[in-house]
Structure formats: structure tokens, C-alpha cells
Length: 505
Image (cartoon, rainbow, N blue to C red; front, side):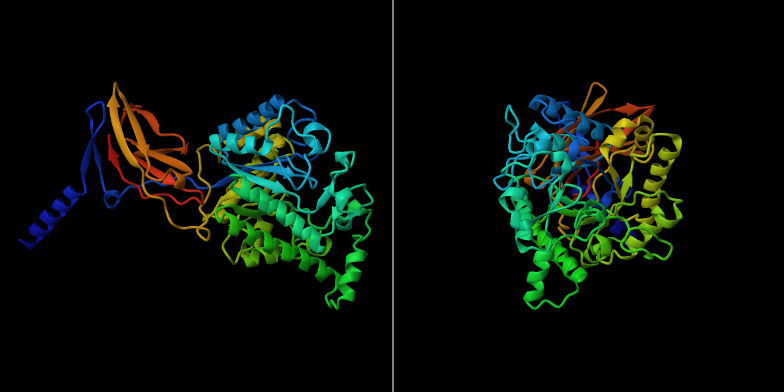
């Protein structure tokens, strides 16, 4: 008798959790509480990004002086390419040499756009705003990539009167290869570069800020000679500074990285900060590793930044092969993972520019799979660069038909925000052999993407859609299997997903 009462109570509770909504087809939709869903599927989670370099017109635009329309066509081609192949992020270089591929009051228009530094696109448009809008329309995150210290690249040709080389010569030194570099230990350098970052974060709807491996320059840029910062070093010593020259240099970069991270979060907490340092911290870490020493050559203590959690994602440039013993991809990845004490995202950089033959296709696919196996809680890869992907058809086909065959959301960042958005309001309508799933949300500002899950027979699948999308039409049956269940979830800017409620078409 007691068992019968418990069963009756359970049935009553289930009845209270069900309600009906009618579509124009008069087909009732039964909505079940998520507690009743015992077979909930999961959307794929993986950061899939490519770098788009603008310095020297490496990737975009293809050459300086293109019309605004041609620049936009090239941008759309690249973004469509990423969407088609199930990427979900693009890392777009907006400050290659203390200049701007966007409207800035702090720095001049980039010469890589028009061919002349300081000259705006004509007809006028804002390239960064265009890239953001076009990326978001395609479901891609847009991360702005800035070089914090490079003041002039040799491919930039003429140094204009608007260049920081001319406007702030106190911050800049000339290297023997013809480049100019801002002195990282100079407070004026740090103030200016931080102001540029803050300005972009404040004015643009970006998803991330990204620095690569250019801190102090590679010594080959200066003919093997030491970085020419004698003036600032003398000021430091005169003020009573006790650090060694190397530690003093690293201290300046460390302070800058921590400052930028905090200033980004103070402006928009959800904007991720990513760093892509040289792939080796020091030779001998781990023991089998040999190669360039970024700690003592670039004065970049990348291990410290990871240990301290001054970043949201960390992308060491692991541009070597799996079986390259002295710089092995998995060996280095495993070491960096052991240093990820704050559990930030570890999404390695991969070199896709080595060619499109079977060997290189296998190498990149295997690196992606190794990353998934070693870092199952937050998988991801960043590919250098988009040019290698567009150029080598066999390579992109191997990636897109292999590990990137299905769409994926960017992994969540719970240290930024772990509060899921509310679930959307959903209804289904059966009309002429098709099911229209439609939805809305009480707070669209809290939504970045939608995931629509659907089940034919016993098999679940899903589609990731953009914030502006409001419906998806599916066949009532597929391959002899009936569409049994659907679910729609809302996903916010930091990757949190709403609860799942099953709907029965």
C-alpha cells in the first residue's frame, strides 16, 4: 500500500511538471522538466581558431591599397571558410606596428590597409567593426591580436609623422635589421600599450585580446647584439634598482601582463585574455627539450603568467612535430599542462603552413587528437595561420572531415562567470512532414548562441546557431527514424549553457 501511494504521488508530480503549448499546426508540444531527461546529450566543446596576420599583408588584406569593397570581400571569404569548416574563433591582427586597423585616436591607420600610414580606408569603413560583425554573424568569436611593443616593421616602409617612432622617440629604439621597438621597461611604453588595449575593449564588441611571442625582440633582429636599452637601464640603476638586467627586463613585462589582464576585466569581465608565447620556456624543461630560451632571450617568463592565472587561455607555439625528439609536441604540451596550476585554458598553437601532403595532414590531425586526449576538460587548438589552411585543400579536408566534422562551442570559462542563462521559451509545430522548432528568450542580452538538440530514433545530434536565429526546421522522420525529442538551450558569452528541457514534437 505504501509503495502504491509513492507511485501515485510521483505520477501526480510528473503531471504538474507537464504543460501544453499549441502551434499553428494544432500539434501539441509536451514539455518535460529537465529532471525527467535521463538521456541528455552534450554539445561538443573545443576552441578552434586560426590566426589572421595583417603585418606585411601575410593573410589580409592580400596587398595594400585594395578598395574597401575588395578588402571586405577578402574578409568575408576567410570568415566563410572558417564557418564552413566548423571553426568557432578567429584571431585577427589589429595592431601590427603601433598602428591601427580600426578607428583610433591613439595610433595612426595602418599602412597595410592603404599603403600609407595614417590614411583611412576609402570609401570609409572601420575594418575591425566589419570583422566583428561578420564573424559574429557566422558564429565565430573575434579576438583582437596586438603586438604590444613593435613600433615599426620593415615591411611598413615609410615612417610617417604620425608614427610613434616620430611622436614618442623617448619610447623607441632602432634595431639593426631596420625595425623599431618600444622599450618594454619604460613606463611610458606600458602606459601607452595598455591604453590601446583598454580603448579597444571599451569601444568594440570583441570576445578576446591576444598577444603573441613578440616581447623583447629575437636577438637576430638586432644582429645578435643585446637590446639597446642603455638609457632606461641607467635610470633604473641610478634610482637604486638592485635587480639584474635580465630580472629587471622580465619584471617590466610581468607587470605589464598583469596590468593588462586586470584592466580588461575591469572593463568587460567576459573578454578573454590570451597569450601565445614561444613554445619552449627554457631548454631542459622538461629534460629532453632543447632550443631557444625565451626566458633569457625574449625576457618572457611565460611560465609565471600561466602559474599566476594572468591569462584566460594560453597558446604556446608548439610548431614542432610529434616525433621531433628535442622539441616534441606532446612532451612540451604535457609540461605546460603540468604548469597550469590555475586551470586556465591550454590551447596550443599548431603550424599548418608546412604543406598539404599526407604526412602533414596526419601530423596536424594527430596533434589535435593528442590535445584532446591530454586535455579532455578544455580542448582547443589555434592554427598558424589561416593561409596554410586555405592553401592546402587536402589539409583542411582532413581536419574538417576528421576532428572538426561536427560543430563545437568554445569551452566555458567558469573563473570569469559560472552562472548559466535562463532557458529559452520553446515551441514545436508539425506541418507537412516537417517540425519547426522555434524559441525566444526573456533576456537576449544574456545570450550569445543557441544549441538545438534533436533525436531521431535513439540517436541525438545538435546544431549550434547564432543569437539572431529563432527557429530550425527538421524533417519529421529521417532515414526511417522518427524525430522523437528536441531541446533548445541558451549559451552566454563565457560558454555557460542553460538547463535542458525535452520537448516532444
